[in-house]
Image (cartoon, rainbow, N blue to C red; front, top):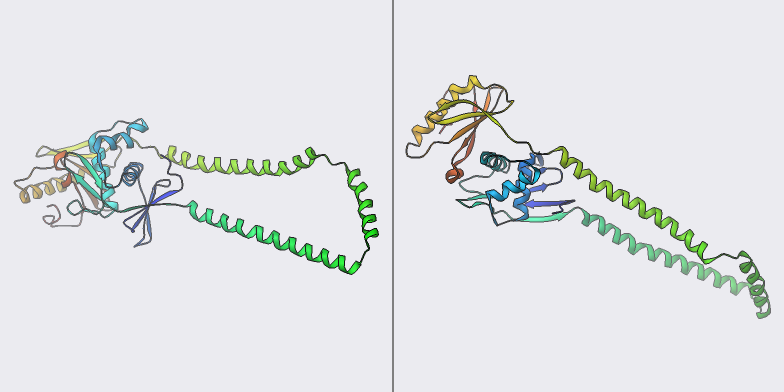
Length: 308
């Protein structure tokens, strides 16, 4: 599956480059750096547009092929993050559609483009121009030699004498065909070697970048439990203990507004810097389309509308 030099245009709005893990938004002229997990998920989608891809297939492509084994919540969180980057909605999706009990489907138009097209066109134009230049030079030489023969007005005898005098000079040079061919082939060999080195470097650069950006297994610490909902944070994340009352308040407001619906099985909290907290509501697999991420500010006094 070679995607070197290949980019994908999504819905004529985003340009996805899997080699640099970047997503460029044409409408805002902004480029977003994707995480390795999100980038490989999006690559799987654009390589199989409109196809229903099972969750196990995504696990295999994103993690198992890289030698990692993660739980199902890692995929759910990566899908949620990718939707947020694409400004996609779970209720009215434009890009990623959840197919209950089957997997996901990428429903956006995908156009595949390669950066090599412009280079090949430039080479073709250069090849078209070169023969014309050589023909013009040849015609100029023939014209000048014809004019010289007309002005000199040499008779047949003098012309034959000139030809006979030239032949020994050519013979005395004694240039062997092997020497001539070897002198011609040598620059071609050097040119081919330089091209091979350039191609080798072109192939090595993405490989080195890919190896340095290998995915890591996501692990979580449990801060607290509220109404059988685990409140978790990633390992080595700054302490968010002071946010536990706010998180419990959000869960309580959510339960009041959705009394007949199930609660999330876990909440993954991140952030906490500059009084801003991100809460990722993670539901069971059959209700995963309800997964959502909200941002809470420490300065907000009324969380009833936000935590619904």
